[in-house]
Image 1 (cartoon, rainbow, N blue to C red):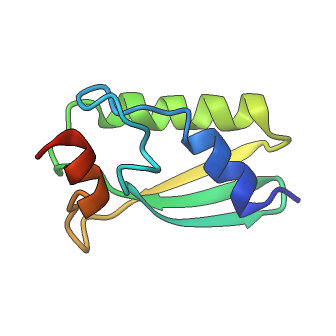
Image 2 (cartoon, rainbow, N blue to C red):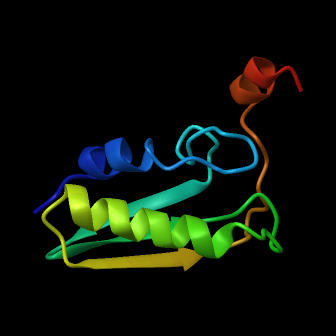
Length: 95
């Protein structure tokens, strides 16, 4: 079975198109649950109306299936709690 750490390494290669920072560093991933033959990811978007959401989900699924021995990727979206950018990322971006 895959590990949470393996999934995180793949998620670090998926970048938010608007900010050009990976979704793990952005704090968009709330939970990773490895399962037999797959993984369940609970995540959010920067806004509930994010135009890049479907593209991000598709890229996550493709990269995980390409780089890890899994068949199923389940992505659960939540907006509770609402997204807030991590303080260290704000400082890095000068926001």
